[in-house]
Image (cartoon, rainbow, N blue to C red; front, top):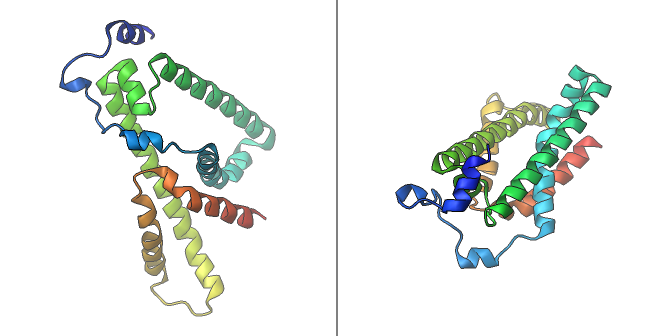
Length: 193
């Protein structure tokens, strides 16, 4: 398993067109604009709370409270070990700053393509999950607030969700979502209480 990593360290990166990164690298200006720890914490909390809070009650119901908590603890440990291994590999390979660069440097260009495809599939899945939740809850919320809603309520809710979410999807950098992430965490807290 470590043989490709050791070979990459000994030989350096291969020459040729396949050694070039698939995505453009950060410029010096981007490197100067590092994201602060609080901004990262807000975005991370939003990712954890947003995705996890939706499925957690059903998972605990199906698994049982005790076994569900044991599974949650095991996944927390596995996540900690995985992130620690990623950080150690990035430091060993010269400070790679994203998954694609780390995969390319450690395992080659095919690994970078695989990682980027995996990230794309994960992001599309998360977006679809949010749209499904929004579609299920928005119609009920509008019916609760309006006595006689129009007959085309579901398409109106879908259009409203698209108009609300599309601008948020067009940012080049997730750090731009700091304010909306904080609002999202606040909304989840209000709903939970």
